[in-house]
Length: 208
Image 1 (tube, rainbow, N blue to C red):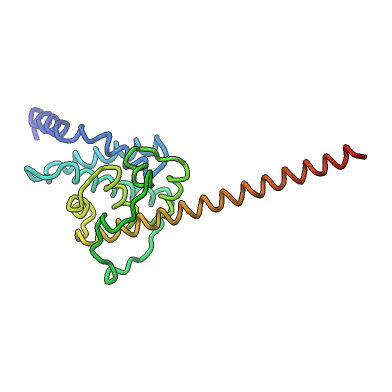
Image 2 (tube, rainbow, N blue to C red):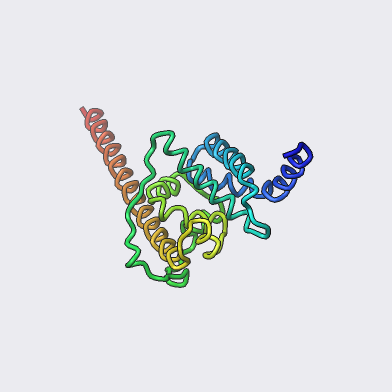
């Protein structure tokens, strides 16, 4: 490849892909929970994307193509760091085509927080408790606003499976958050009881 051809290719690549950098970073950070790691993963994603830019067919979904590369980079990152991404087998035969209409309505539910980028520590912990098979569809739907067809393309799974895994992910997320709140309440009660016992002991000493 000549120098002019290289720079023309680079210019075309940047034109098609740079606008998705923010979305890629949000997705990476929501999975890695670390700014530097997320930036490194996004950088590696662009390196790999440029190397394989010739494979991107005209009029293809560039965003979905980049996100597929990003998810592969994240998987490689965890392998290198000897971390384990939680995975659980999913019974494909029991998955049904479930839509958002089957879900109960909530004000300020976890999906709303994800959509508004309000990922607090409790929500982040609950997200990390999900297996990757459920986590990735949820992140692509709620953070990146991909539709079912686009998610299916990124993850190479049927649309019906996407809908089913989204349903399971949301249910698991709500259950985990409810469990975390219960644990927090128990911890608060224990702390309040300990403080009350200390005050009673102090009162008895003062009476002597």
